[in-house]
Amino acid sequence: MRIGLLAAGIAVAMTTLGTDATGQGRAFVPPQCDVPKGHYLVSSAVLYLQNAGRTRFQDQRQRDLRDARRVLLEAITEKDQDQNGSAWYYLARYYQEMRDLVGADSAFDRAAPMLPDCAQDITDNRRRLWVPLLNAAVDRIKAGDNEGAIAQLREANAIFASEPPAFYYMGQIFANLQQRDSAIAYYDQALAIARRPENAEKEQYADIRDNAEFNIARIYHIDQKYDSAAAWYARFRQHDPTDAQATTGQASALESAGRIEEALALYDSVLIMSDSMSTLDLFQAGVALFRTRRLQRAAEAFERGLERNPHFRDALFNLANTYLSLANDVDSTLPKAEQERLEREYGEKMVPVVNRLVAGDPASTAALRLLAAALQLTGQPDSTLAVLERIEALPFEITISTFEPAGSSFDVRGIITNLRSEGTAVPAVTFEYLTEAGEVVQSIVLESRSLEPEGMAPIAMAPVGEGIAAWRYRVGS
Image (cartoon, rainbow, N blue to C red; front, side, top):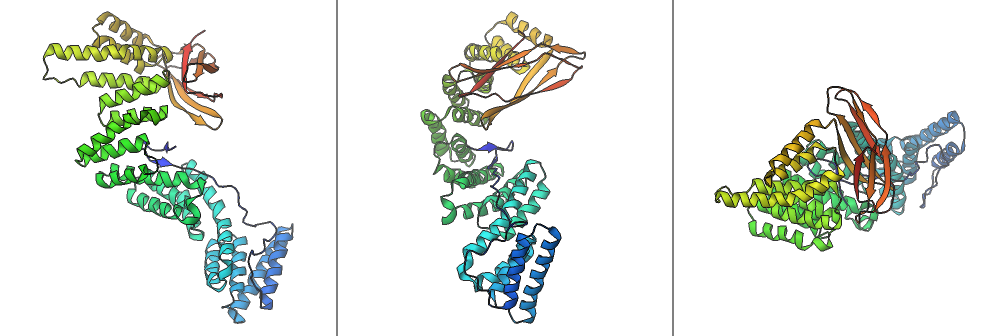
């Protein structure tokens, strides 16, 4: 459900809203409420606004809009119409056409108490100005232009503050900028708005409600405010009690706060809940447990996940590393024979896992080093040396950094790196994309290529098919 944007684990819900016309250059949208014109100058302004919306000629449009402004200001300042809500309403509509946010905001504020039956219409017109600002800000965020995004989000919040996205994105930007107090303040505002009755049932804001709670918890955790972090994780888990990241995060915060018994109960619950977790959630739980040095539990989470999807490369890699960490953490006060027995036991668990890993990722030095470590733990020095020589002889390395859904396909990205100081020929590489059951959904061949000394070549694929859950590759025909 959540997409991690930062190494710290902050979550983002990034949505571009559908277009919502401002009316600029289109037919003037009449008010959806009773706005009595009253004064003749106000009636004239309405005609000018309507004409501006009908004309195809930009110079005529600008003249009509100027005339609308002129007669409205004359009515308000010279004809005692400053208490006429209609005059202020149509002045706001003029500013809306001109995309003058400050003018529109001020004029709508003046009109609203005089035209109580037009509250929804005014809200709708404010929103028409807000949508393009929000969408432009989202584009800037995606492009990495935080400064420009902040400016547009502030404009958006100024004209319309009845829906949560702009506040949420401000929180996201400040979290990325490590301005965590500001991030929490904006996330909190987004939550308060998202929970208003008119927004609470809107499905498009469900991720914002969830992610804001999770992100506040994560920020408090990073800032070592462990009791607050635990409380926010618990708040999130009220509506998603089986979320692996939130459960392990809460357990870690409780442990750091000295609430050991509560923490241990939650760590245990992760594995108790494993049958109701998705495979990826089990893998995420394993990562979280590993990070908190709950190595036995981490190993069990990876093992259970791999029972469902035995080909998932990262889980194989993480399980092998967990066994290696368990071997390295053997109690040094034990008798030497017992230490060696335990180390060998973990090495024996590693070997089949790493063999599967290397079979699917044969041009990975990291995978081969794990194989060498496993063989060393099991007392196979000749085989260990052979693997180390294989690493030394490896001419190039393949690294896959991204494997995630992207609409109807997957986004797969990585890099091929020449490990030599001279040019290297890379033969064709065939990638196979598999279901959890190991059935090949699609094969994609990367053509042979040459790499310059210590050069690199990007990998980018978009496999399509039902049930893709893992990848593997082979080098050569």
